[in-house]
Image (cartoon, rainbow, N blue to C red; front, side, top):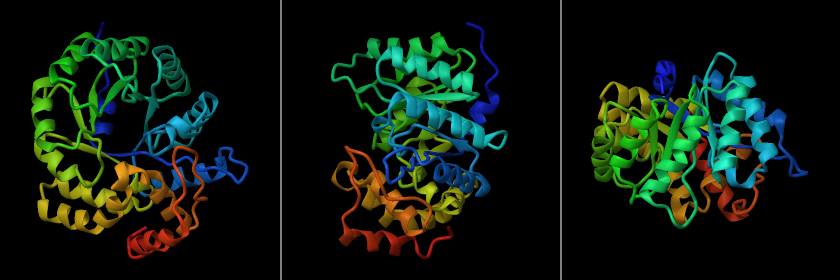
Length: 303
């Protein structure tokens, strides 16, 4: 396979990789007007990499038709202002079809959701991602790594077979494990994205990451970009000041195995009057008694 020129895509991963929420109407349909407004707010705030159909976008709660609509809307709104990294996954056929659709819609990359099947072998993981990558050789492909049992050598083998696998969204909560994994896979071969957002970004940047994902960026783009600027400058103290600022918010998202991960973000957006707090199962809106705490946390941010 000839190596595609994906320099721009690689550069886009070394950034704040925003995971936009998916707003819903009172009738539980996609709220496209609110969605466009939220995307425009991100773009106007300086965000240059968008991941429609990510976990903060409630990927698993959307139908296939809705996921396609979210992809098309995001590509259209982004235009030439941002790189679009579309989340794809589920069975191989569904993932390949979504990747092909992303290419047709004008996206530049796909992020492959972690396989949710209970029996995942090293070779099976490689085969799964290879099938997707080979179906869209023109697109950058970014595996979402959440399985601590995955070996760095397996990603190395995938990269050797598929030149368009250009990065990894690494979301195992262990900075030492990440540093070892990245070096086993090829530190310079892939762009490493800290997939556990701002709280893990400083420690993962120390291990070789150059970008991080963010759901918080939906609420406060300037806060996430301030952390990126500090990390790029090697200013650990400045990065940790941002870390301290957002820690209570991110800890609310992380409790009970991240049960309220999306609920906290949507609650903050609702408090700002930007979209409804509505979610779909298996997520659930925050109870009344916890909503004021979220609003209070973001009240003093540069939003």
